[in-house]
Image (tube, rainbow, N blue to C red; front, side, top):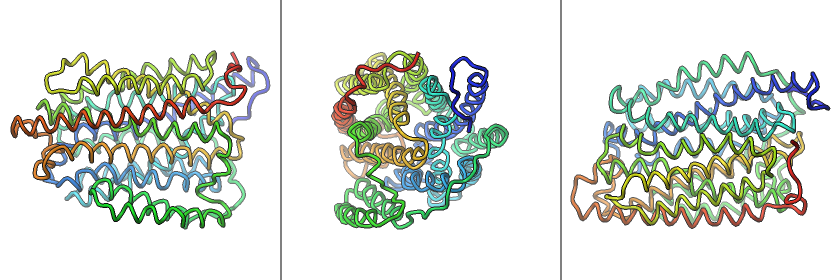
Length: 483
């Protein structure tokens, strides 16, 4: 990666900045690839469920398999990239995700589709574990917030196009094209990344904490099974694995959960805020998409258009926050983003109903989107700026794992709370988007579920505000970023 220039405005600084923006275009394509995949499927899920006649458990795991694998392997691939080279692991992630997307489009049954979604998760972990570190290393410190804002905005663009594109594809070409549209983007990203990213020498060979990664995967799997199936036994198993994990990590030479890196209050609270914010916001497009289809009887395309205020808000807020980051501290952006997320969820909680005017729902979704874009830009800049270069890879992997655990639990919890509102015999019709056709009584039960789910997410968002506010250091309120 480019060396940090000594003097802003110098020729070396300008050259480094030009390279940094090319790097940002590569990593932005990575977020587009992953964001497009998730946002299109969130809206088109009912079409996939109807095609395979999938039950509630299989329906939820079409989403959860990808999230579980990508989350459980983030730190692992952060460490592998530190050892083998960040460029190489990043490009392999592109190739793996693209190949799995191609195969997912020809899956013969739901079991094979879930397995291929897990394979997509491996590729996504390689991309996510390295993208932020690559951007941080490429940008001069005085432009990092701006670069991070544009980087995060690319995810917003993918989420902006994804819902409408997913609905349109599901209604016209069929659900298989939901996966096949990832292939051209993946090929372009792989070729552009190979051309732009500079080769970085591999670091010193160190052991990888395979046992720790395995325990993290087992514990997270048990938690997801407990939530999605409503069974207490897997939850007990997950709790039993926690002391085993800490015992293994104390002896590991390079632990997957290196808690000594988070001994300071700022890093600890910033990561807790990231977890809470992800838990509160990550399932919002999925939840709103199900609302429009299952409660209002809309088709996939109409639902995709209906959820657009979320990515529109992110698309506006991410680069704006990045620009403000040169004058406003990342801490202030992080807290402000959490407040916006909670405010939007409050609007959705009090207004949830089958006859609520769309403009009210749209305001709530838009404010949530603005909160997400603002928080992600501020929180990421705050954490990455505080880290020494030699620890960015593993720490970023851990940071993303914490956030992605929130994403996984957000999807699992949302689906569990929502479907618990109706009798078991009708739950598959929520995923299929056909419950509004059953009876007025079933619709009333579903609306109770939506209000309860939004309320749970609002309470979680409030905890994110608290953690973000606590992520200050003695000088953070006095300091301002370099102009």
